[in-house]
Length: 119
Length: 457
Image (cartoon, rainbow over all chains, first blue to last red; front, side, top):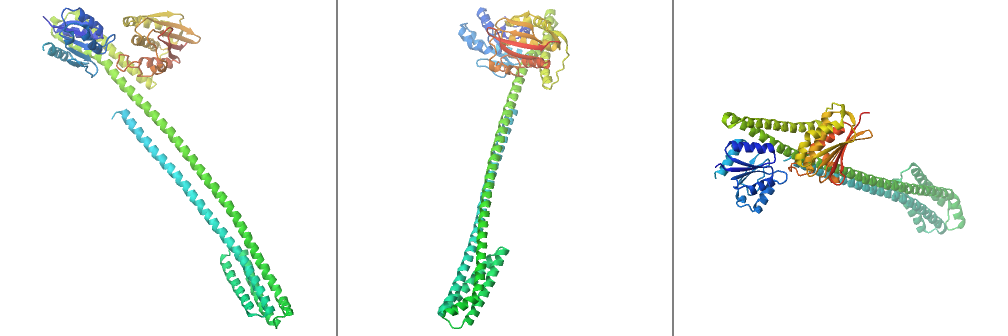
């Protein structure tokens, strides 16, 4: 069964492009437009995703707030899901496996995703 | 070193140079005052010497008179008594008289003084000679008739010498009085000059310090403005970069996805290719719009905003803008309704006015996306007025001018509040049309942006 990857990104075009790239590569994809939507999605799924691709600057709930509040949601195993941050800035928040700076290409994205999922 | 840090260093160096110059100026002024003081002291000393010399001359003239009187008295005593020591006393007084004459000759400064002196000396010589002759002629000493004869022979010369000495003494007294009066006058003038120099120095010093302080304040203000401008520019570049990164990422990945799909036709369907194509188009448009806004700002900076003014109706522009951007406002949580109370027209550049209205709507989606907003179009006298009242947090009074400056944002640099260009551009466009734009409190709470354009007369 193909690993599931969650993409959290407020730009609809970016979100659907990332989803399309990952689906084209054979992954199952969960999408959310902000941190709050992502947390609600995680509470509803039967199996947690193997990786979360997370944008930092988003309306409603930004990426850093999502990361900070995730452990308090009492979703078993959610806090241990690896997170790869998608950002335009150079900052990397604490507790993530890596950062992918915009603009990035598909090869780089897939390589980073694969390195985390297959670990 | 960043330009801002460079400007700060340059300003600090400039301020240091100015401070050094001020200290040098103050030192020069103090030195000038000291020199003036020393000059005054020298003048007083010279004047003092002149007075002492004149007083000495007067004293010597008076001594001359006494010496002559001693000489005359000793001669009379000798004639009366025939005692030799009176004769010696008379000779001694005559010698002292000669010595005093010699001293006075060395001190004589004026022609009149020299003349009176020589006349006194010659008269005294004549007197001495007359005295000797009278003594020889008088014969036996000790008789009163002898003295009478002596006196009758010498008296004219005695009177003449006394008169000359008296004239010399008067002359010397006059000279002393004149010199004293002159000394007082010169000392007063010198004091006045010193006072004026000190006053001028103090004024020059105060002027220099005032000018320098004003210059320093101006330099510091310019430096602060420069630093602010550089900081704003840096933030703008950071935000512009950030805004460009997202559409560029979409463009990059979509084109790569397209290439992969074309390489593997089985993996791509028409729907996917269509979605990719429209996404490419949207993001190219987004990048183009971003670049257009940056160019607009550059043009406004250079004063190169060309306006194509044609008859235009504000209500129509507002309707079209809301029709176009309404869905975005709805999606952002701030549906905008339009109230057209009047349909004012004017000669405006329709595209630019549309840009103003659009920027206001975009601004609402960024800062007041919590409740419905109302746009109204009215006419107030000779002004066509468009207002947009939202129910967001409003704009603090202190920020109501600042938000119309370029690169200024109410939010943090990277909180998604835009590049700080929308309102600045809108304000510049309105001003270029001879209109005005400001922000006020909305009824209840929130902000109310107001645009006024001159209507067609």
